[in-house]
Picture 1: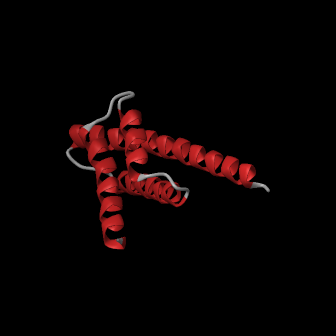
Picture 2: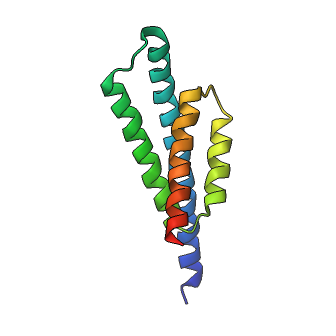
Length: 113
């Protein structure tokens, strides 16, 4: 009877997950770019800044996990992340930080099968 409502709720949840993942990627890129700039200027990274990168990675991982639970495919998530990464300046450190999370998710999915 309420199948349409359930489907609508699932679509809204998936859309919200996509938005959250894109936001997390932008935040991780911004923080990683700052840390990379600091590394280039001083030759070292402030431990507090490194913790901010790790926290941003954890938020991204949590939202990817939530997206997978809301029936988003990993390919759909990766396409959204790639699209987000094409906007703005993305340093090598930021690409590595995002790549690390995606590799972790792929590894976890392989182990689960």
